[in-house]
Length: 324
Image (cartoon, rainbow, N blue to C red; front, side, top):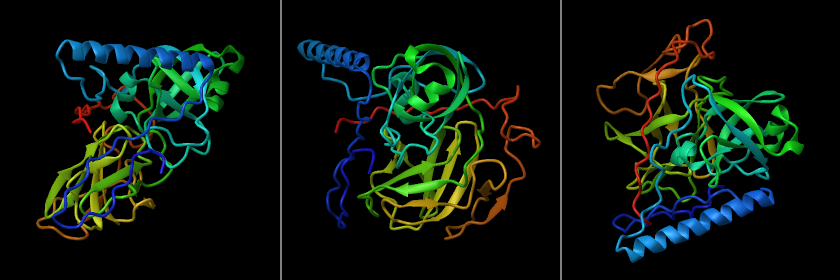
């Protein structure tokens, strides 16, 4: 388990459900300059809470910063890059492990956007060239435009001796997919408490829904990238509908209640192998499916390359959760 939240044991019928526990931030593995910055940020947070209490206001629950949103679309951004080592861990996005190529990035709170960036990709350009990185982690002390790259990714674009370099970066629209969607039911989940991690989706996700009793139930994204239905979604197997920020939508069936196991589906988020369900007349275990011939926006000849007609991203910001 990489997100650090406590597992939820099976809950008997009629019993009170325990509250969800948010995930743990990634373990610090940065240079002393990063630790000093983190200490100042923590001190500022303590002062802010103290002033709020003295003024009669209750401390606010953790929520994404105002205007928080992941980098999307074809526009270029400018900023700076540093580097760190996750020690093989999957970061705040709760991946089981770092990608095998070790090309990943941690974003500051405004661009991490309470997990909305997880699983997307950025092309980052520095003095030596360009590298494509997976958004895998959050850098709590990073300002907007500050990318904290893996050491391997930083070495692709600059001399590591420099430590900090100026960069430009942009979101990758419809990157090549490693395979069909994966689903991982969280440890401690049961028919009374549902939590799933979706992987290999390419673009950032907008929504995850579970079909139950003939209706779609929306799951809520936590900042550690699991999608939760706190009241549960039944014992499974599950039919899960996934939609990304560019409008690609697919439905996977047969996802089992198998906590801790990565289950690979048979559908891809877009391109060859993408499958969408037709509207069922009544609930069924295996909704009818039909293959799509092309992604909704890119031309058929180049389904992975961004074009001037890049689809307009639609992002639903995570709602501030109640205090645990």
